[in-house]
Length: 527
Image (tube, rainbow, N blue to C red; front, side, top):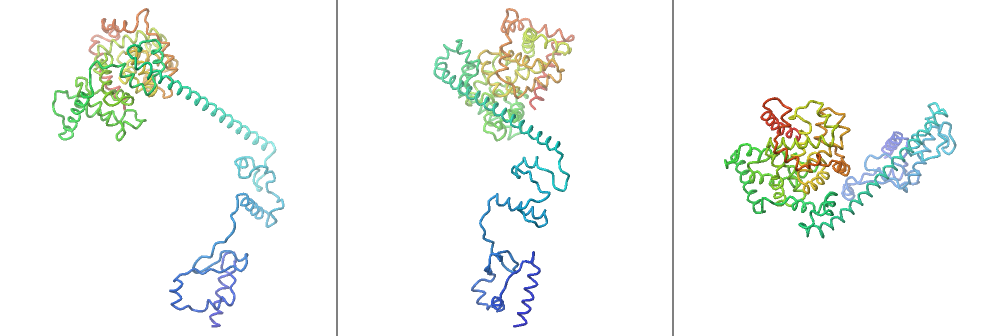
């Protein structure tokens, strides 16, 4: 027993000496006597095989972690410390370590004495003195740093104030616009729409129309303004939609469509081009792409139209027009408006690629372009561009094919659609002149390639009020002739003016190159 106790005491002393920080563990003789006894197997089953053994601290100084072969020492029970106490303790330890063990309450040589600010703040990190092992800052350098810091703070405050003023101004304008829309909505719902036939051409209604339609009445006004000359009914839409689904089902089963009288180009466009273009229609919205809420709806409207008008089929650019209508109308109403809209003379000429009519529209547009913007017109003429590669034709193709829904922000495009439904095709070309006037100074500094790229993809931050102010400044008058008169005159005269720019055999050559331009330019742009 003495040998074992002696060896155990030797082990305890060596264990205490090997503990980190030479932390001792006080053990009395009675405790050693208890530890020397070997417990029986019953005691193991009674208290658990690996039970925790806690040593009761005899004094607060002993309440420190120690070494044990098995189990853990109980955690120290101390009240939680606030952040200020922790900071003071950290400063005290840092001061003790830096001064070689002197009291932390005494001022230490080399410690920072000018901390009249929170040492944990960003200001302290910028303005505090250098460490004691480095040379102190010169007075001039410290003053310069203080001045630079004050200037940075003042500039940051100025930016914050300017940003806050901008946000307040935007909020004020938004509230004003919302109030205006709410008031206009009441007028449209209670006064204008119930008396549409009598009030649609009054001065009051036309002024409200120019300012933009409220979103919740836009679809209704568009339907009334476009009309339904084709007498399409929702039941007729269901018939053509069923026919389109049958063709798609037949193609998926056999790999080729049944010959129902449609051309090969129509069969290919109704399948490949529609699926391709739907995924590229307003991609930032993520609602027309595969899996989006309007993907199948847009597919149905376009497929039904290819069956309704196999002579036109599907042409790239139609998906944007149908998508804008779907966003504002129910499915059947969107199809009715879509079919009637594409049946208008201007849209039908472009989507059927009627070369002669397209040339006449371009010729009429050039008349008003030269009348209203002579400097920009001459700038384009100086480049010696042939009509088939003429800048305005390239941009105008994209603008007309998509009714500006591809080139303008969606909210601005919808406002253009509002007045287009009121004024007809004239407003499409007037909008083109307004865009050219808005960016005239920029375009005068550009060459052909950069101008074409700029006009095809207009800036995203275009302001609708500025654009419409430029459109107002574009009167569609050539002498005493209006757009309808000039356009009708060009239709009667043919395209003699445009043909003077090209070599012998111009009509055939220009028509074929316009056809290639329509397909290639739109395909590249929609990609």
